[in-house]
Amino acid sequence: MSPKRKIIFSVSLLFLLGMVFFAGFYFGGYKKVCEVCPPSDIDFSLFWESWKVLQEKFVDKTKFDVQKMIYGAISGMIESLGDPYTVFLTPQDSKKFSEDVRGSFGGIGIEIDIKGGQLMVVSPLEGTPAQKAGFKAGDSILAINGTSTAGMDVNEAVKLIRGDKGTEVTLTMDREGWDSPKDIKIIRDIITVPSLKLEFKDDGICYLRLYQFSEQASFDFSGAANDILNSQCQRIVLDLRDNPGGYLEVSKDIAGWFLERNKVVVLEHFGGDKEDKQYRSLGPSVFLEYPVVVLINSGSASASEILAGALRDNRGVLLIGEKSFGKGSVQEMEELQGGSSLKITVAKWLTPKGESISDEGLEPDIKVEMTEEDYANDRDPQLDKAIEVIKGIR
Image 1 (cartoon, rainbow, N blue to C red):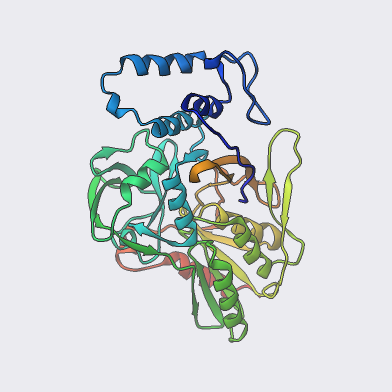
Image 2: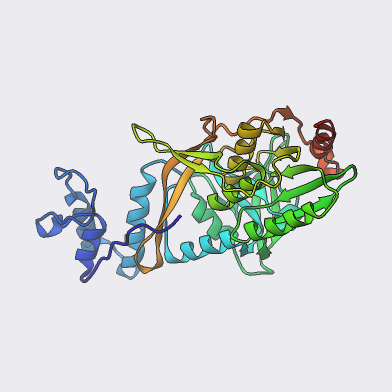
């Protein structure tokens, strides 16, 4: 996710706008400002005509915020692509994104995304107000403080949900099996998301739950790995449920603890005639001989799906639980001027055997569903099944 190339814009307002849209048709000429420019027969005069009419006739000139208009025009151009993962981030949104991947931010503690045109919960984060309020992966978010989420992108939803600690937000939620939607009020808090949890079970079984693949996760996993190696643990249950993902490099690093060196962890598929890029494990492979099973559910997304797919395809590790989310597209962050950025889809993830993660998700080898009664009575039949299965692996 290293930044690519910065494009610097300058001087007057109209020239700035013209360069943003790769043209200077307002001045009667074409100005090349990028390596891959639109065809020369594209006519940008409609944009400038609209700008001129707004300047001349719009009733309330106090609402003219030039920077906001530029951001809005860029966002509209990107939204026309119909890809919910390719988005323009203002400087404020870019800062929030950086806070998210570092694992500390303000809000209620849910990972959200759009699937099938509906804003939904990917996963509630561990120990957060959302988890305590009973949010589940797959819940639909119909409204935020009374504002419908129909047609709303993820960034706008995040802005509405975020807020100062101690303030209240109301989400209108729906869930399969409910008779009707429900309004759920939650008090915001400072969200600090842990990387993992390690527990030592009976019969030499280690239970290792990864909550996210943040910057801190590689360091924390190394510490947990040393604890495992210094224990009587002989088998590992790796829990990736409700893990919304994070950094690819962190997922690849963790995969290296379980795989032989130089095994394919994931393929980056660019489409067309372009060759797939391979990401391979680097070791240290210390858990190569440990029996492992992996827990997944509909909240397992992105980097967690990559890790689960790598262990399944390379070692035949069994996946237990429910089908994963299916977040299999690749985004790069392009840093733009003024602190803004562009998160752009450049490829799709494939498992080592070439299965597309995008949209479909990973199917569990052993399907075990969680019911409302299980949640209400603090039962975990998925974990129970994982422990049962790993006891039988030699």
